[in-house]
Length: 356
Image 1 (tube, rainbow, N blue to C red):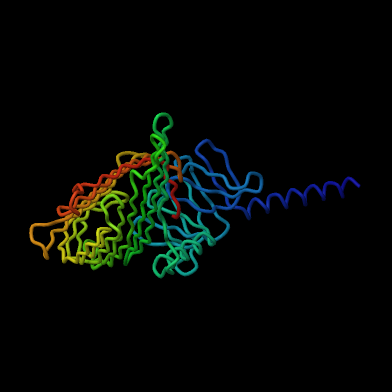
Image 2: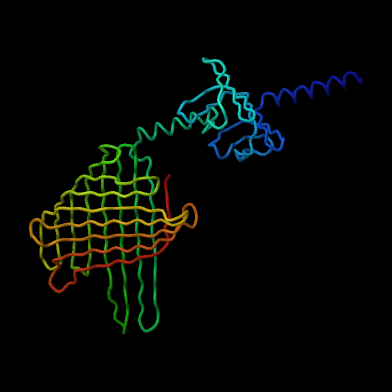
């Protein structure tokens, strides 16, 4: 009976040892050894999937050694990818590959580690970026704000905005929409104090890393400018002076056709040149400033022009929730008689982001 018990204990212990040998091993600087399956590493964190705690994230600086029982993909700083089982200790790394035998490298040379499943997912994402469908890769935001007053005068202001963009290595589609409406009641009489809607779409196609061509359509309605509709279509060429992550500065120029319909019955059609600039600057981890200025000199009525200016400051609260302050100005040198040249739009409120 004792022999049977000893045999069972030995078999059970052997199974435990075999299980640990089949698992990946991560050795830490403090001497601890963790068992599981290496999922990935980006050079900052190593993700290990364990049976006892699920996926755990380990600081890469705390890792002294890694041994994998399954094939992994190592991406090196020189752009090479090495595939095989890994034995890593201190700064020495040995990779047992299928075709090239044992390949030696160092921990310092590794930028990423991916399991087979992670590599498949990564390659699928690359394929999606190279050949995306029209519904893919969209990201953007929704803006909303409301303000009210009550007392001798009652007012309510609602503003809404949307911006969405689809960016690939070859082109960019961007669309926007913004609206503001203010109603006021005083001495028992109700009236509108502001009512404007703006929207449009633009397509950019890259010629090189720095230059691009573009085409666009803008639509605008402004009740108090007596503007029923302004339809502008045009295009041109642009140049990216600076671009890095969320920071960029572009300049562009071209031409446009402007068709205007006013509530007074006036209709105007004008050819326009256009020249402008746009920038985005991340001030810190939470604040982003964007700005765009476009000048439209009229070539049908020499001396007349339009000027569009937009700037926004966004403060990030969390991954998807932000607070925005936007200033938008539309200057028209030849407004309908009795109207002012400038229409200034100031909005603030929440911003909800979407997409990746």
